[in-house]
Amino acid sequence: MAGSDLTLRPFLWRAANLFPEKEVVSRTHRGRERYTYGAFDDRVNALANALDALGVGPGARVGTLGWNHHRHFEAYYAVPLMGAQLHTVNVQLSDDHTEYIVNDAADDLLLVDPGGPVETLERVWDDLESPRAVVVMDEETPALDVDVSVHAYEDLLADHAGAYGWPDLDESQPAAMCYTSGTTGRPKGVEYTHKMMYAHAMMVMTPAALDVAEGDVVMPVVPMFHVNSWEFPFAATMIGAKQVYPGPSPDAETLVSLIRDEGVTLTAGVPTVWINVLDYLDEHDESVPSLERIVVGGSAAPEAVMRRYEDEYGVVIDHAWGMTETMSIGSVSRPKSTMAGLDSDEIYAKRAKQGLLSPGLEMKVVDAEAGERVPWDGESAGELYVRGATVTRAYYDRPEANAEEFEDGWLKTGDIVTVDGDGYIDVVDRAKDVIKSGGEWISSIELENALMGHDAVAEAAVVAVDHAKWRERPVAYAVRAAGEDVTGAKLREFLADDFPTWWLPDNVVFVESVPKTATGKFDKKRLREETDDPDLVWTPGK
Ligand code: AMP
Image 1 (cartoon, rainbow, N blue to C red):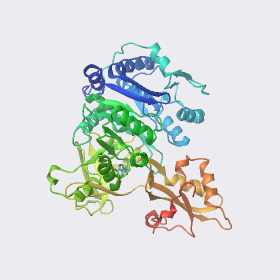
Image 2 (cartoon, helix red, strand yellow):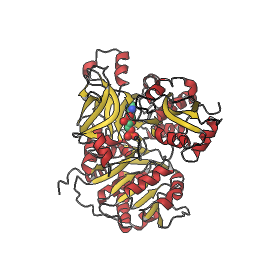
Image 3 (cartoon, rainbow, N blue to C red):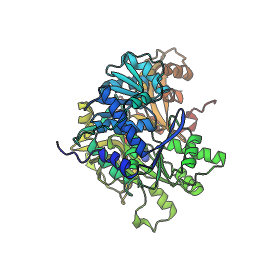
Image 4 (cartoon, protein in one colour):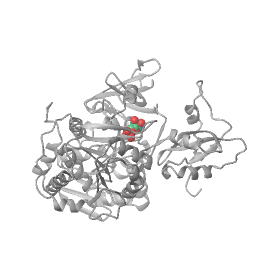
């Protein structure tokens, strides 16, 4: 065995033995539930016994389709600690992506939330090849039309109480897996070994990264299907902090009431969530006195939002950058101690950038065409390359993507950045042709191909436009086929057959021709430059 010290086992041990009385609060579709780390430990052991009885052994993959709640949190520990691999599947994907991802990972068993995720499972079931059993993360199971055994999570735990003998594990063994759709082709799987998880949770705890302390009350709002909820469920457990899981599709009112009732001090999620919460606080004249910090990342945090949180509610926004490939958090923007002389505007200008690379990582910025490093002068832009213990070295089973997206041990992030003389990263563009809306990826190429599959469309190009709340929204440029008079509304209806509503372009702009580059490809750069017009963004009811 290469080494067995850097595994997740001591995370559970520490919380169970040193903080058995600290609380875990969980909102499910049934309401708010709470227990202690002591009870959590008992249930993690029972879950491992139950999964063992269902045939989950070392090396098996357990897929989850679930929101942020205590049962999902229990699976975060039971599955990797048994020597199996936890594969968190995004519950907001199109059916096509869900089916592809579960089949590609060849998940042996699925843990699924009641409601939307169960409905998704039923729709895609006939095309799934690998799952041998389904566990519904609830007290009972709905009538599910699938041809394998279906179990209620709580029945399983009741039947399998007792200690599980956690095995010694090789730290280079995969513990978890997450797919990224931030790519122009099929989603790509990223595997996280125990050693990577250990290293990332340790990094995240430090004051240079997220600064998680035992006295914090931590509420991870970033979904548990997004890169392990940015590792909060590991860092917060290891440190012994109280945790609050906000449950299925939490709205602003739910988040504010959880923060107030449970005394949340530290929370995290994408900008859209915190813009909604800010609007809610303003409209309802509410406050969140316990809240000290929000880690905002996944898309750029607007400086105006950072200022309003701090000025009006005394809450500091820590702007963070990261990727599925870097196990989430890879940089955080805080001023250095040597910047005490800067005025408030200068400090905000720094904090609105993506910030300083986290401890344990290295970076370089490369001009792809010249193949040279660009200077750190705050102006020269190039692609960000990163490497380190918490950066994946390869995608799962994707040799072609591996050849393209890794170079001499560096991950090419696809983010175009400048770096200033103090080392602060600023993401200024994206090399890949994808759109990130509300923290979730939309593939412009899939939308274009679908649009061009419509008889009345000769050409279509889809680009992102800036949006105050969602940060980016898709807009389509289409050329009608000769003699056709199809409308934008009809094309949206057409796309709705195959894509989730939130993928549908906010507007379809009809043009004579789509601009092309010298090599005949759609000139997305030019289109993006032309899409500053706010009227291109569709507003419901307008
Ligand atoms: P994902 O793999 O889904 O987590 O997406 C990672 C990508 O999201 C990065 O490569 C960036 O393009 C984008 N991203 C993440 N954090 C930020 C941020 N703070 N500002 C701008 N873009 C970000």
